[in-house]
Amino acid sequence: MALPWALGLGFGGALALSPSVFAQVESPVMVTTTALTPESLQVALDTLWVLVAGFLVFFMNAGFCMLETGFCRSKNAVNLLAKNLIVFGLSTLAFWVLGFGLMFGDGNGISGYSGFFLSGSDNSPATGDAYQGVYDSLSWAGVPLKAKFFFQLAFAGTAATIVSGAVAERIKFLAFFVFSLLLVGISYPITGHWIWGGGFLAELGFYDFAGSTVVHSVGGWAALIGAILLGPRIGRYQQRPIAMPGHNLSLSALGCLILWLGWFGFNPGSTMAADPFAISHIVVTTNLAGAMGALAATVTSWIYLDKPDLSMIINGVLAGLVGITASCAYVSVGSAALIGLLAGVIVVFSVTFVDRLKIDDPVGAISVHLVCGVWGTLAVGLFSVGPGIYPWYGTDGSPLTGLFMGGGLTQIFIQLLGIVAVAAFTALFSLVSWLIIKVTIGIRVSATEEQTGLDLGEHAMEAYPEFEITH
Image (cartoon, rainbow, N blue to C red; front, side):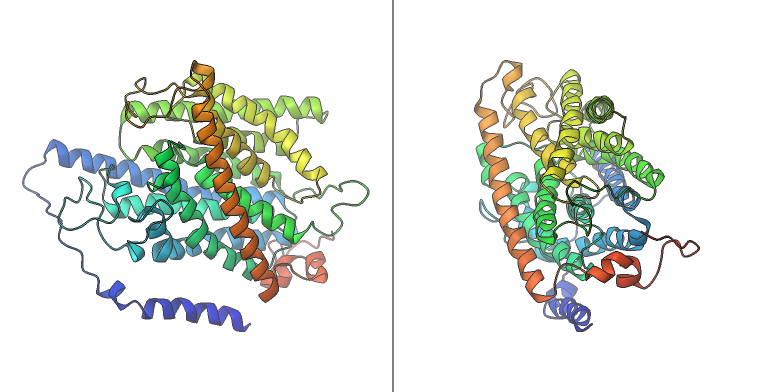
């Protein structure tokens, strides 16, 4: 039990060694209360929209909580709930101390190296040019820096939460604790800087509007490496895969609906402005993709697996939503429907393929977030309407016209390059991190603890103490 104490002392020590964090005094921002100008009203509306969208993305943590808990066995319910609850606290600390600066702070094409502990200004219209800005990559959005930080924090927390489901029912709580800090504090923001922080992929013309790669594929790659190193749950694979049904699909269905709702903050909130036309378009493309993903997964599982599998329907919804996340602002409504439909088909075959590889993913996170995240990123190069069509992303720096919309292969190649670069870095970082954790504190609980259940072994409590259930 010495390591949790060491972690606590480490956090405290890091803060104690940074007295400037507590002494930091921000330059005053000139605010007038005597007259409401059109500019100040726009800033207020934009800020309100970004914060409400951030609240919706934050609430997605509840969706992941319900989804993952329902998909797993009752003896591990407390563990799943605890991981999904603590992960946002861990993400908040890691992103505040290190991640936000690495991702959005001014630096070079690889990483930011300023703005740690949320210090400095971004020189946006909301703050003015009172002093030197260090977040130039965010200066295009006219809302206060702290609103931008909270919105981006909610995204960072989502990436870490994705990992939880794929490693469920056999990982040590402390191992997940440490890996989440490393992912959100270092890996996620570095690759995020490449795309959203003005890094080299952004310079090449790689586009990912709301995070099919930045958030979902990054979480998926980390989850894949973790699941492989952990190995399958005891008894999961013998001569054939042995089903280990989730204990409460009602919770999982509720979680899916919460996540669907949260996506209406995730995608349209990435406008970072209360632009009614852009938001309306993105809400419709997002919803249509999720709906088509659900329908496609239903029909595909009905044909391929003989029955309309509820777990596949749930993952079909999420697959469609992940699939449209990169291109939601850049494609037509019809293209969004096709992107979601294909994601719903892909996820069914991906889940069964991953199972055949004997990679144990209790909730299908690898298929939903990694595989469909890759598909969604490629969809930008296939279906983008190109520059000058939609006014909310203008002509300068817009994605090129997609292959299926009369364009060429250039945008596809750029998207592929981004996918490979992010995959290589995230997979390598995750492999090294998981291996270090494995040889130090260990990543997997004992066989006895796994068979008894992580609720008793890791937390000394049960989610359903009134029932005696044997697994």
